[in-house]
Length: 56
Image (cartoon, rainbow, N blue to C red; front, side):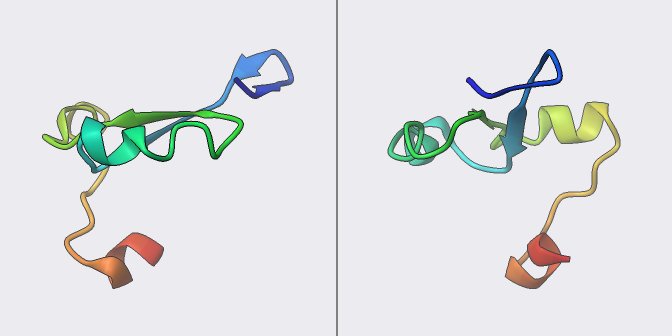
């Protein structure tokens, strides 16, 4: 995992575990699947409903 200034960097994505599993070794940080947006809701992060919202 990527350590940055003593922190572990992790990315939470609106995706399913099986989708992210294919990409888990492509990045130096952990990808966390949150397909049900539980973490998004807990931390008041708005879900992207399409690609344009995701980029914005």
